[in-house]
Length: 457
Image 1 (cartoon, rainbow, N blue to C red):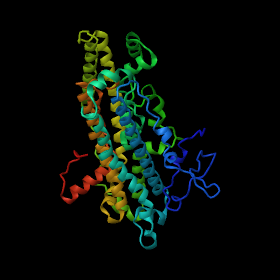
Image 2: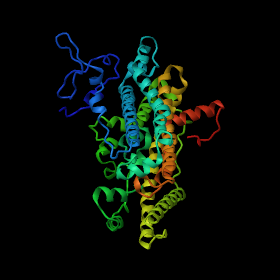
Image 3: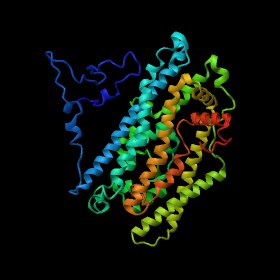
Image 4: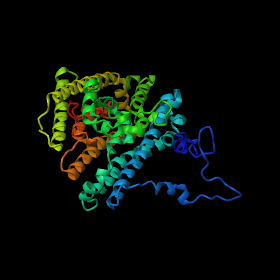
């Protein structure tokens, strides 16, 4: 068996001179030639090319309820769309890296700023990134909402069949555990959010480690994290942990660093001597997150209130008084402090990062206004729209489906904490390509088409 079954998937190039090369057998890389010629014949079929034996046997329902089949297929379609999005993000990352590493005339050529012979080839070079960015936007704008439609209405997916016939069989599996989605969030600037301890681990401790309620309460009381874990914690993501937080050697690693790489590339472009005066414009400020004690305390209070609501809901479900015990109240206070500690650190780290992005903002402002650099603008615009649609569209639509199916916001993954709606207030604070968004807003203000406010960011 090939130890790297997806080696062919990651064997690609953005170099126009290499993109047409056939993938060959390479034991070191793990690649295989898919359709070699034997005695003048080629034996590949549609069925074998798409690995349909594997693909069409990858569904294992837990019940005899027919509607469980579309439940599985819909979630597998989500993951296939995420798979393609991740690859497309990797293509864009490779393109940005090539620009970063270019020097002199080659840098001018790849940016589209060259003249004469130095201008040739930019369009060909950017073509994979352009189509990748367009697909990412299409996935978020069309594909993801379309797939969600299979689960959103009783006409297509019966609620009683779901809640009564097979949902009880699925513990502790949850869409909350999508490691690919977390990697996409990381690529689009959400790493600070993924570093915050904000999710109660009770549900997973019970189902995966077999701990009872008393043991969970005791472990939370004794641990420094008060029972909270990060969204990418291995306890939650299980087999997918190395996808959401990939090691340096992983093919996913460049995807995780995409937002940073984009800003580093812009900073690199800002250092071009011939463009220095234009791209280091000191009037291109990047907005900061509120980092005062009052804002931190307000967020802590909001988090603690969500945790309290979740605990009360769990108690009601167990036919207990909704009033929290003294131990539960004390643990709730500790959870609030843990969250505040991580939230304040994430905000300050993010602001420190943004403070370095003045040159990147200046470069983006120049690139977004110059007709020769339309490739940058198209890729940036697609990524920013995709981020908005995922953060404000997909997550919100998911929340509405949960409400419709279960009659309340029940607590993601059985935690009792109404995490989905609270996460909305956090996710939008870490937008993708913040320096590019700031540059676009500054261009609007300068042109008189926008007010001097960064609220839109």
